[in-house]
Image (cartoon, rainbow over all chains, first blue to last red; front, side):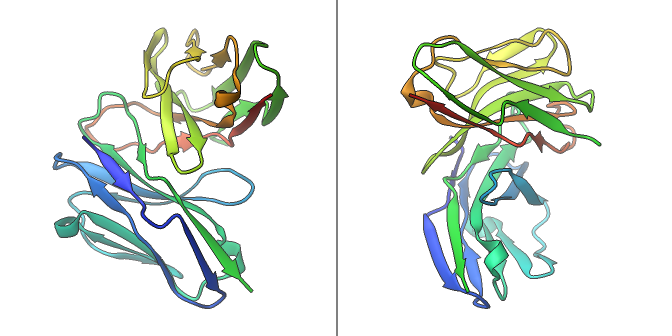
Length: 116
Length: 116
């Protein structure tokens, strides 16, 4: 069965600290896609990144970076020099290339609070 | 502008009073789906539709109905809402669920439903 686990329910940091959000996934499929979404207090889902299973290159986008390691089935997300505006719920998600339901499998979410 | 719209955005209702949450997309997408989001559980798929008149159950379909009479619309119907259906609901659409190459999933802004 496929599963996404975000073990950190809540994280609290002080502004300018670096923070890493963990994501571990389970699947036997070889072709899949991984995602991170941000959900600010307003409630909408904001797409951050998509990675396919054949692309293990780490990615950096401004203060955001993602570390994809197939060997450990992890797709961790780091925010460098966090800001108050980063406070949100973050979801990691998985979709299988073979899926016949088109379903995104979400983790439980990690609530990040960045204090000034 | 390409978008998925949902209405209403907020709804407070009472047990047993039938309600419909509308979802509409303007991208001519074949695939649409509904998710509910609950604390500690992430987002879970309720129903999905591969195309007009083709719908199927997701992981948590009990207490919900859907219809897909037109390509652009995919309403979620709660015939007799109960308090355990209090949740945040998201509609989503994709060009198609085909696995040949990933096509982006677009989410609506969410509908916050409270059933008293």
